[in-house]
Length: 231
Image (cartoon, rainbow, N blue to C red; front, side, top):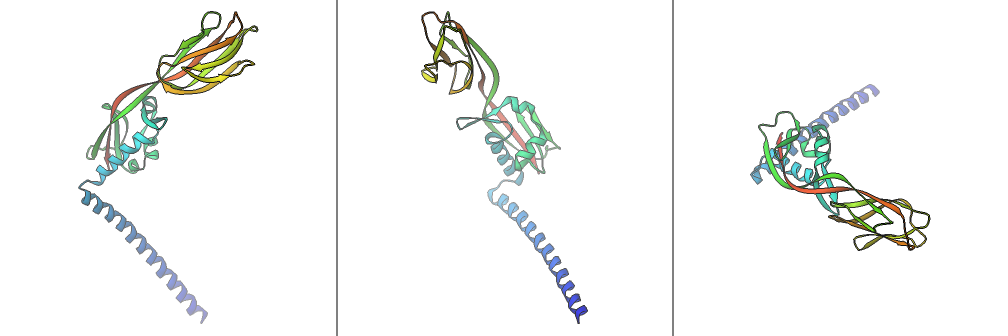
């Protein structure tokens, strides 16, 4: 009796396993069929849709984008350092497909041969980064100007023993204030603008010492990104 029950149980399990395989196959087939139906309904190929989604992702949230106060831009330094493996891992529409990504006609990443695929082109804002520096000799001046747009400034405040640096401004905004004195290295966020002017206010009739200023500046330009996907 037990052997018959055991045989029946094994037969039932085997049947269940076959059913699960069939359900999985049908589900995968249904999803693929739905994708094809969607492509047909919209008049676009799957490759066209994937290329469009990839272009959107590359310009909004990817290893080649830089964000400033909610605005996204292509970082040309990051774009120069990227590769197809990095982009495919970060941008789902590029996975398991041959693709090519170009900026202003220059290929920055390519995998496989996407020559038979669909291509999407988008205009975008791009930024390049560079280091800028300035210095204030407290015995001769009270301000310096950095050339370029930035959102963070590094300050090295080194007053002489007879000098108290009380306030530091960027433009008209007070970024540091301490009546007892400001010294040492400080990093401050500043409004994202071009050519920020750093001003120092001191106590004493004959101030001396220095304030060195450095930052990473961002220069903007317009580029065209081109994405080809062959799925």
